[in-house]
Amino acid sequence: MANHVVHTCIRVLDAKASQRFYEALGFQARGRLNFDTAYNLYMGLPGDGDTLELTVNLDQDEPYDLGTGYNHMALTVGDIEDVLTSLSSLGVEPEKPPFHPGGRDDLPLIAFVADPDGYRVELIDGGVFDTPQDPAG
Amino acid sequence: MANHVVHTCIRVLDAKASQRFYEALGFQARGRLNFDTAYNLYMGLPGDGDTLELTVNLDQDEPYDLGTGYNHMALTVGDIEDVLTSLSSLGVEPEKPPFHPGGRDDLPLIAFVADPDGYRVELIDGGVFDTPQDPAG
Image (cartoon, each protein chain N blue to C red):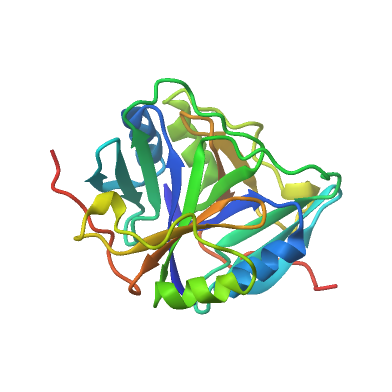
Protein backbone atom coordinates (compact mmCIF):
# COMPACT_ATOMS: atom_id res chain seq x y z
CA MET A 1 0.00 0.00 0.00
CA ALA A 2 1.02 3.57 -0.52
CA ASN A 3 2.12 5.55 2.53
CA HIS A 4 2.14 9.08 1.28
CA VAL A 5 1.48 11.32 -1.71
CA VAL A 6 4.91 12.83 -2.30
CA HIS A 7 4.63 15.13 -5.28
CA THR A 8 2.94 16.05 -8.53
CA CYS A 9 5.35 16.20 -11.46
CA ILE A 10 4.95 18.39 -14.53
CA ARG A 11 7.37 18.89 -17.42
CA VAL A 12 8.29 22.55 -17.86
CA LEU A 13 10.03 24.40 -20.67
CA ASP A 14 11.50 27.41 -18.85
CA ALA A 15 12.59 26.47 -15.35
CA LYS A 16 13.22 30.04 -14.23
CA ALA A 17 9.79 31.22 -15.37
CA SER A 18 8.16 28.30 -13.56
CA GLN A 19 10.10 28.99 -10.38
CA ARG A 20 9.09 32.67 -10.45
CA PHE A 21 5.46 31.71 -10.85
CA TYR A 22 5.38 29.15 -8.06
CA GLU A 23 7.44 31.39 -5.77
CA ALA A 24 4.79 34.08 -6.26
CA LEU A 25 2.31 31.53 -4.88
CA GLY A 26 4.52 30.95 -1.84
CA PHE A 27 6.48 27.87 -2.92
CA GLN A 28 10.13 27.64 -1.92
CA ALA A 29 12.89 26.17 -4.08
CA ARG A 30 14.06 23.00 -2.34
CA GLY A 31 16.72 21.40 -4.50
CA ARG A 32 17.31 19.38 -7.61
CA LEU A 33 18.25 16.01 -9.02
CA ASN A 34 20.46 15.79 -12.10
CA PHE A 35 20.29 13.13 -14.79
CA ASP A 36 21.91 12.74 -18.20
CA THR A 37 19.05 14.12 -20.26
CA ALA A 38 16.99 16.05 -17.70
CA TYR A 39 16.95 17.54 -14.24
CA ASN A 40 14.22 17.79 -11.63
CA LEU A 41 13.60 20.87 -9.52
CA TYR A 42 11.69 20.47 -6.27
CA MET A 43 9.51 23.09 -4.63
CA GLY A 44 7.25 23.09 -1.59
CA LEU A 45 5.20 25.36 0.63
CA PRO A 46 6.64 26.39 4.01
CA GLY A 47 6.28 23.55 6.51
CA ASP A 48 5.31 21.07 3.83
CA GLY A 49 7.21 18.51 1.75
CA ASP A 50 8.63 18.81 -1.74
CA THR A 51 5.17 18.61 -3.25
CA LEU A 52 6.00 19.93 -6.72
CA GLU A 53 8.51 18.33 -9.07
CA LEU A 54 9.40 20.27 -12.21
CA THR A 55 11.08 18.11 -14.83
CA VAL A 56 13.29 19.99 -17.28
CA ASN A 57 14.21 17.90 -20.32
CA LEU A 58 17.46 19.25 -21.74
CA ASP A 59 16.53 18.59 -25.38
CA GLN A 60 13.06 20.18 -25.17
CA ASP A 61 12.63 23.40 -27.11
CA GLU A 62 8.97 23.23 -28.12
CA PRO A 63 6.06 23.92 -25.74
CA TYR A 64 4.60 20.79 -24.22
CA ASP A 65 1.23 19.56 -25.45
CA LEU A 66 -1.00 19.74 -22.37
CA GLY A 67 -3.74 17.55 -23.86
CA THR A 68 -7.20 17.36 -22.31
CA GLY A 69 -6.67 14.95 -19.40
CA TYR A 70 -4.69 16.53 -16.61
CA ASN A 71 -6.76 19.21 -14.94
CA HIS A 72 -4.97 21.09 -12.15
CA MET A 73 -3.22 21.27 -8.81
CA ALA A 74 -5.35 22.91 -6.12
CA LEU A 75 -4.02 25.17 -3.38
CA THR A 76 -5.80 26.78 -0.47
CA VAL A 77 -4.88 30.43 -0.07
CA GLY A 78 -5.47 32.81 2.81
CA ASP A 79 -6.99 35.56 0.67
CA ILE A 80 -7.65 34.92 -2.98
CA GLU A 81 -7.70 38.60 -3.94
CA ASP A 82 -4.27 39.15 -2.37
CA VAL A 83 -2.84 36.20 -4.31
CA LEU A 84 -4.38 37.39 -7.57
CA THR A 85 -2.89 40.84 -6.99
CA SER A 86 0.56 39.29 -6.50
CA LEU A 87 0.18 37.22 -9.66
CA SER A 88 -1.04 40.22 -11.64
CA SER A 89 2.36 41.85 -11.10
CA LEU A 90 3.81 38.89 -13.03
CA GLY A 91 1.27 39.43 -15.80
CA VAL A 92 -0.81 36.43 -14.68
CA GLU A 93 -4.58 36.92 -14.68
CA PRO A 94 -7.23 34.37 -13.67
CA GLU A 95 -9.34 32.60 -16.30
CA LYS A 96 -12.24 34.59 -14.84
CA PRO A 97 -12.79 36.45 -11.57
CA PRO A 98 -13.19 34.35 -8.41
CA PHE A 99 -16.44 32.39 -8.38
CA HIS A 100 -18.28 29.73 -6.44
CA PRO A 101 -18.05 26.38 -8.32
CA GLY A 102 -21.33 25.62 -10.05
CA GLY A 103 -22.75 28.84 -8.60
CA ARG A 104 -23.01 27.06 -5.25
CA ASP A 105 -22.65 29.45 -2.34
CA ASP A 106 -21.89 26.53 -0.03
CA LEU A 107 -18.55 26.12 -1.82
CA PRO A 108 -15.64 28.52 -1.31
CA LEU A 109 -14.56 31.08 -3.87
CA ILE A 110 -12.07 29.68 -6.35
CA ALA A 111 -10.13 30.92 -9.36
CA PHE A 112 -7.92 29.22 -11.92
CA VAL A 113 -4.63 30.63 -13.10
CA ALA A 114 -2.21 29.20 -15.65
CA ASP A 115 1.48 28.66 -14.96
CA PRO A 116 4.06 29.58 -17.66
CA ASP A 117 3.51 26.27 -19.50
CA GLY A 118 -0.27 26.64 -19.26
CA TYR A 119 -0.90 24.12 -16.45
CA ARG A 120 -3.94 25.22 -14.49
CA VAL A 121 -3.62 25.93 -10.78
CA GLU A 122 -6.79 26.19 -8.69
CA LEU A 123 -6.75 28.74 -5.89
CA ILE A 124 -9.28 28.05 -3.12
CA ASP A 125 -10.08 30.97 -0.86
CA GLY A 126 -10.15 30.84 2.90
CA GLY A 127 -7.24 28.89 4.31
CA VAL A 128 -7.12 25.23 5.23
CA PHE A 129 -10.29 23.16 5.49
CA ASP A 130 -11.73 19.81 4.49
CA THR A 131 -13.01 19.40 0.95
CA PRO A 132 -16.77 20.16 0.94
CA GLN A 133 -18.71 17.14 -0.21
CA ASP A 134 -22.24 16.23 -1.22
CA PRO A 135 -24.14 13.37 0.38
CA ALA A 136 -23.38 9.95 -1.09
CA GLY A 137 -25.87 8.49 -3.50
CA MET B 1 0.30 33.15 -0.35
CA ALA B 2 -0.79 29.58 -0.60
CA ASN B 3 -1.30 27.64 2.64
CA HIS B 4 -1.56 24.10 1.49
CA VAL B 5 -1.46 21.80 -1.52
CA VAL B 6 -4.94 20.28 -1.44
CA HIS B 7 -5.22 17.93 -4.39
CA THR B 8 -4.17 16.94 -7.87
CA CYS B 9 -7.09 16.74 -10.30
CA ILE B 10 -7.27 14.50 -13.34
CA ARG B 11 -10.18 13.95 -15.71
CA VAL B 12 -11.16 10.28 -15.90
CA LEU B 13 -13.39 8.38 -18.29
CA ASP B 14 -14.49 5.40 -16.17
CA ALA B 15 -14.91 6.41 -12.54
CA LYS B 16 -15.30 2.86 -11.24
CA ALA B 17 -12.15 1.66 -12.99
CA SER B 18 -10.20 4.61 -11.59
CA GLN B 19 -11.51 3.98 -8.09
CA ARG B 20 -10.54 0.29 -8.27
CA PHE B 21 -7.03 1.25 -9.37
CA TYR B 22 -6.45 3.87 -6.69
CA GLU B 23 -8.04 1.67 -4.01
CA ALA B 24 -5.51 -1.04 -4.95
CA LEU B 25 -2.85 1.54 -4.10
CA GLY B 26 -4.43 2.18 -0.71
CA PHE B 27 -6.57 5.24 -1.46
CA GLN B 28 -9.96 5.50 0.21
CA ALA B 29 -13.08 6.93 -1.42
CA ARG B 30 -13.91 10.13 0.45
CA GLY B 31 -16.94 11.71 -1.21
CA ARG B 32 -18.09 13.67 -4.20
CA LEU B 33 -19.29 17.01 -5.47
CA ASN B 34 -22.04 17.17 -8.09
CA PHE B 35 -22.38 19.78 -10.81
CA ASP B 36 -24.63 20.11 -13.84
CA THR B 37 -22.19 18.68 -16.39
CA ALA B 38 -19.69 16.81 -14.23
CA TYR B 39 -19.00 15.39 -10.81
CA ASN B 40 -15.83 15.16 -8.76
CA LEU B 41 -14.82 12.12 -6.74
CA TYR B 42 -12.33 12.57 -3.92
CA MET B 43 -9.87 10.00 -2.67
CA GLY B 44 -7.10 10.05 -0.10
CA LEU B 45 -4.64 7.83 1.72
CA PRO B 46 -5.43 6.86 5.34
CA GLY B 47 -4.62 9.74 7.67
CA ASP B 48 -4.16 12.16 4.80
CA GLY B 49 -6.42 14.69 3.08
CA ASP B 50 -8.49 14.32 -0.07
CA THR B 51 -5.37 14.50 -2.22
CA LEU B 52 -6.81 13.11 -5.43
CA GLU B 53 -9.74 14.67 -7.30
CA LEU B 54 -11.20 12.66 -10.17
CA THR B 55 -13.34 14.79 -12.48
CA VAL B 56 -15.97 12.86 -14.43
CA ASN B 57 -17.44 14.89 -17.29
CA LEU B 58 -20.90 13.52 -18.04
CA ASP B 59 -20.66 14.10 -21.81
CA GLN B 60 -17.22 12.52 -22.23
CA ASP B 61 -17.14 9.26 -24.15
CA GLU B 62 -13.74 9.39 -25.82
CA PRO B 63 -10.45 8.75 -24.03
CA TYR B 64 -8.72 11.91 -22.86
CA ASP B 65 -5.65 13.09 -24.74
CA LEU B 66 -2.89 12.98 -22.12
CA GLY B 67 -0.49 15.14 -24.13
CA THR B 68 3.21 15.35 -23.26
CA GLY B 69 3.23 17.81 -20.37
CA TYR B 70 1.81 16.28 -17.22
CA ASN B 71 4.17 13.65 -15.92
CA HIS B 72 2.94 11.83 -12.81
CA MET B 73 1.84 11.72 -9.20
CA ALA B 74 4.44 10.13 -6.91
CA LEU B 75 3.65 7.91 -3.93
CA THR B 76 5.95 6.36 -1.39
CA VAL B 77 5.15 2.72 -0.75
CA GLY B 78 6.27 0.40 2.02
CA ASP B 79 7.36 -2.39 -0.32
CA ILE B 80 7.31 -1.82 -4.04
CA GLU B 81 7.21 -5.53 -4.91
CA ASP B 82 4.14 -6.04 -2.72
CA VAL B 83 2.35 -3.14 -4.41
CA LEU B 84 3.26 -4.39 -7.88
CA THR B 85 1.92 -7.82 -6.97
CA SER B 86 -1.39 -6.26 -5.87
CA LEU B 87 -1.62 -4.26 -9.08
CA SER B 88 -0.77 -7.28 -11.19
CA SER B 89 -4.00 -8.90 -9.99
CA LEU B 90 -5.81 -5.97 -11.68
CA GLY B 91 -3.82 -6.57 -14.87
CA VAL B 92 -1.58 -3.56 -14.22
CA GLU B 93 2.12 -4.05 -14.92
CA PRO B 94 4.90 -1.48 -14.46
CA GLU B 95 6.47 0.23 -17.48
CA LYS B 96 9.60 -1.73 -16.55
CA PRO B 97 10.78 -3.54 -13.43
CA PRO B 98 11.75 -1.37 -10.43
CA PHE B 99 14.95 0.58 -11.05
CA HIS B 100 17.10 3.28 -9.53
CA PRO B 101 16.52 6.57 -11.41
CA GLY B 102 19.42 7.30 -13.74
CA GLY B 103 21.08 4.11 -12.52
CA ARG B 104 21.96 5.98 -9.32
CA ASP B 105 22.19 3.63 -6.35
CA ASP B 106 21.85 6.59 -3.98
CA LEU B 107 18.23 6.97 -5.11
CA PRO B 108 15.46 4.59 -4.03
CA LEU B 109 13.93 1.98 -6.29
CA ILE B 110 11.01 3.34 -8.29
CA ALA B 111 8.54 2.05 -10.85
CA PHE B 112 5.89 3.69 -12.98
CA VAL B 113 2.43 2.27 -13.49
CA ALA B 114 -0.42 3.65 -15.58
CA ASP B 115 -3.92 4.21 -14.22
CA PRO B 116 -6.96 3.25 -16.34
CA ASP B 117 -6.76 6.52 -18.34
CA GLY B 118 -3.00 6.16 -18.79
CA TYR B 119 -1.86 8.71 -16.21
CA ARG B 120 1.49 7.65 -14.83
CA VAL B 121 1.88 7.01 -11.12
CA GLU B 122 5.38 6.78 -9.65
CA LEU B 123 5.88 4.30 -6.84
CA ILE B 124 8.88 5.04 -4.62
CA ASP B 125 10.09 2.16 -2.49
CA GLY B 126 10.88 2.36 1.19
CA GLY B 127 8.29 4.34 3.07
CA VAL B 128 8.35 8.04 3.91
CA PHE B 129 11.52 10.09 3.56
CA ASP B 130 12.73 13.43 2.26
CA THR B 131 13.32 13.76 -1.48
CA PRO B 132 17.00 12.99 -2.17
CA GLN B 133 18.69 15.99 -3.74
CA ASP B 134 21.96 16.89 -5.41
CA PRO B 135 24.14 19.77 -4.25
CA ALA B 136 23.06 23.15 -5.63
CA GLY B 137 25.04 24.63 -8.48
